Image 1 (spheres, helix red, strand yellow):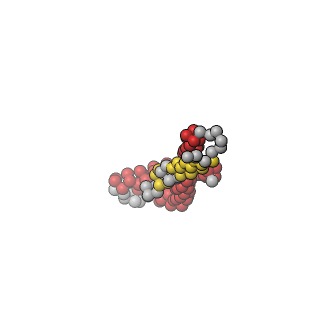
Image 2 (cartoon, helix red, strand yellow):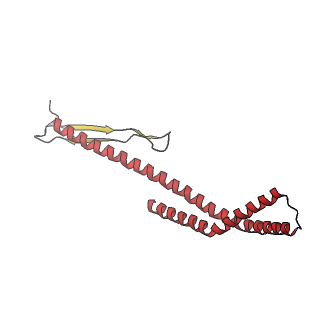
Length: 161
């Protein structure tokens, strides 16, 4: 018997790194025609090695792409969260400022004797005043930081696209 052609197949299967319901099965089939003087066993081994290299390369490419897609989705969620945080803070700012003015007026009225607050009410209002003052002190810094984080994540996202 004279062998004139060799065909080899290499395949692998693996789960999607981020999804429990998906898997991949890359495979390749290579065919070689023997030339005079070729040793079939050596040709088959080399062909099989090449097929395995191709399949493993494809597996790595698929895994890299899955991880890239997951990173893109996470960045989108992070950006959306930061943008919403900035929007909520901006929306809350006038309410906090108004509440602070009202609370200061009530404490001032209580001190002047025109508003009779219970001690626990006054303590609660003073704690709220302290919280609101801290919120207002940190507002610009916090919003700027959240915007900076969103911009950095947007830049990273643009690099991945």
